[in-house]
Image (cartoon, rainbow, N blue to C red; front, side, top):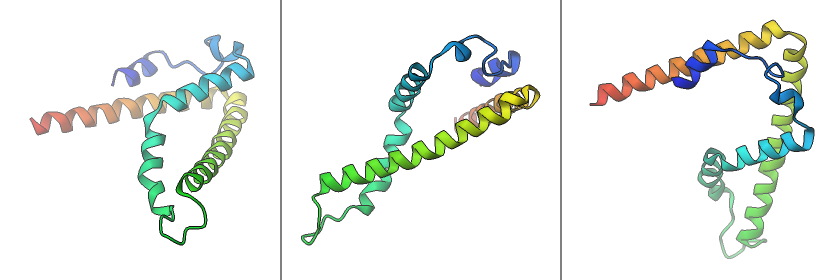
Length: 127
């Protein structure tokens, strides 16, 4: 709820606070890779979905580590393509329309605030 409230209180747009506009391409890439690497959701999803696609029987053509590496590389390539496409499209659309960018930021803040309030009510109802 705190994140949603802070976004609603000061809805900045990308590039107006000085940090995003000054950050170079390689530095922004490293920052994004570190943030994504520290996010456990991707790893948990990967570990919960991946095992059903591994061939562990006696007739397996490839060893399990090689299969895991291949499926992991394929998953990373697909995610990179999707995230790159979404990022470039968002920059093109929202960069040209600051009003739309502010609306997206405010909608995101309201959604965070609403989800936080819903989770708080759920938690209080369990007590």
